[in-house]
Length: 516
Image (cartoon, rainbow, N blue to C red):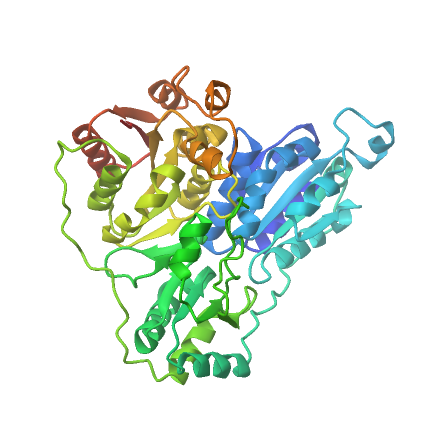
C-alpha cells in the first residue's frame, strides 16, 4: 500500500467518501489508487472553482465533508473564490492539494509556488504531509478539523513522494468535538429580554433555520411578537408552503436599515450583527439601529437548535402556533410578459415538494424572493460569500449529496459563465438538475452599483464593461455543447411549458429565459 491508497482509505474511514477533483501530474498516484479504493466516489470537474463549489453544495446538503483534489498552487488558486463562499457558509471541506516531490522542491520548477500561502486565507487548518507513513493520520486530522463546529475548511498538502512511497496503515477516524452548548445564563438573559415587550428581531443563521429548530424559532416569535429574520445570504433555509415564515434581510444597506428601523433589541442565533455588503457614499455600513441592544443566544460554533429548544421551554412557548406560509392564489396568465417576477411565479407553481433551489439570479431574483414562499416545501441555498460563479457548482454537489431530490438552479447569464463547466459534470453524472438562466444580456446588478457608488461616468465605455449582449451568449449552443438538453424560452407560455416538462423528467436540463 502506498501513501495515496492509505490517504483514500483513511478518508473513507472518516466517512469522507466523495472526492471532487481536477488532478494533474503530482496527483496521479491518488488517481490510480481510486481503482483500489472503490468506496471513494470520484467526480471530475473541468475547472477547480467547479470542484470547490461542488464540495460546498455537497457539505450543505450531506452535513459532512467531501474531499477536493487540486493540482499544485495554481489549481488551488483557481478554486479560491468558491472556497471563500464555502467558508462563509461554514461548509466542512477537506482539500487535498498535490505538490512537487520533496526531492524536486529545490529546483524551483515552473509550477512551484507557496501552496500554504494560497491556502491560509480560505482554510482553518493547513498541513503538509512529510512522509507516506503519516499521510493516513494527516487525513484523519484534516477531517476532524473540518467537522469541528460550525464547519471548517481543511487543506492537506501532499508532496508527490508521500503519495508514491510505501505506507504502513489506514488511520481510524478521530473523535469530533461535540458542539458547545449555550450557557444557561445566555438562555435566561434572552428569555428575560423577550419578556420586556420591546420591538425585537431574532436574526437566525445556520442549522437553526432547519427542521425542529426552525419550528422552535417560529414558536418563540409567535409567543413574544418578535420578528423572525434570516441573513440575506443564509447558507440553507427551509422554505415554502407549510414552513415557518422567515423574513429575509434586504440586500441593499439602506433598505436593510429601513427594514430594521425601530428595532429595540436584536437577538443573534448563530448570526452576526448585519452590515452592508459594500460601503457607499452617505449610506450606512452598520445596519443595527442606534440604541438597539444586541444580545447573543448562540455564537456560530454553538448548538443553535438546542438553545432554541431550551428557550421555548423558558418562555413556555410549546403551545404557540408559529406563523406558517400559506398557499396563495397565483395571479398570472401565460400571456403576461416573460420577466423575472413571472418566472419566479412559474417556478413556484411547478416546483415539486422537497426540491432544492440554488439561487444566484442576483438582480433577477433578489427583488422576488418572497414569491417562492408560495412554492411547495423546499430547501433554499444562497450565494453566501458574494463571489459570483458559485451556485451552478453548488447545485452539482447538492445533487450528488441528495440524488433523491430535484435541484433547480436560478442564475443570471453573467454569473453562469463563471462556472459554466458545471453543466458538463451534471451531464456526465446524470444529475437531476434544472438550470434556469435569466438571459438579461448584462451584469445588471453592476449597472445599479455604478450609480449607487456615485461614480461620475455612465458613458459608453463604462456601459460596455457591463454589457453581455455584444455578442449575445447562445445558451442553446452552450448547454448542448456541454451535454445538457437546452431550451430557449422567449415567452412566458414557452417558459411554463419548458419548466413544467423539466419538473416531470429526470436528468440535467437548461432553460434560457430571454428577458424583455
